[in-house]
Image (cartoon, rainbow, N blue to C red):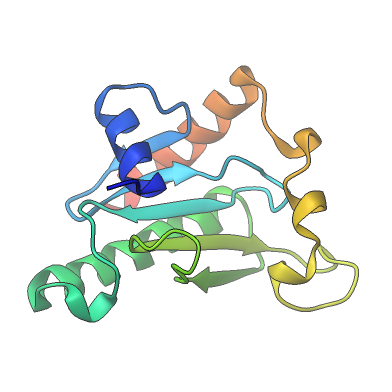
Length: 148
């Protein structure tokens, strides 16, 4: 299987994913590669599943509860005014949540994050250097530890 998310999880297990924040019971917390939206975080399901209804009921409930805890931690750690949640899967068909901390006027026109052009949102200037990335990871880890 050639799944980008599964590959990223393998990197986490080998301690080769520089964006890794924390392992939870049902998934892995990682900062997004690009930080146009400061604190953009993903919560990756621990195993390959395509749809929420594919998950066993108890695991699904815990996955959702953990995602909510991660979202709350992101909001606190990065001082968001609002959180956006997305679970799409059209590009990477492996369950994962996009958690976007939002602030007033963080987009030219109020609306969803996807109204920001892909090239702009993923521009190299929004990729963090190692020192800044480590600082942001520690900030999120601290809040997650407090909430868990």
